[in-house]
Length: 173
Image (cartoon, rainbow, N blue to C red):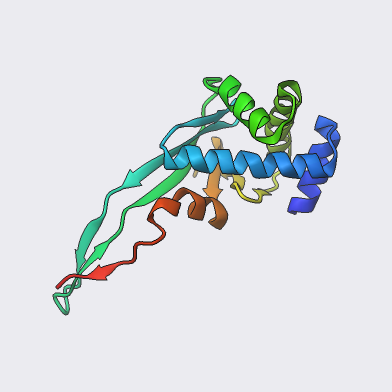
């Protein structure tokens, strides 16, 4: 499903206009990225909890040349599937404050966002949310178990790793 189609689908279910839906999605992605940098989990009930993990800098040696390179730290961002509702009120308030939108409208928006993602996934389609990432259903080898997989998009990866964006790998020996 394209981003444009997803926004149309979302705006109909949360009864907000396209501009407001787009603004809320953009603000949500920024809040999620900021939380990722600070390693604070963000839970969207019914979908999962988005968590980050900081990997420290490391040295890698090329076995052929003996050249050692120092690589900067990086942060990975992923989603753990769970039904916990921890922290939703905080997310709603932060999103409402950052967009000057009433908290109840933000609550409806977040509920519609999760509902729409899950509905589209149930139809067997992949959902790409610009600034956040792609959601898809993964079947187990036996074809019985299904889980929602999440891959952050490039924008999310860049925002989460912004503190390290000025560091480049450096040859040290």
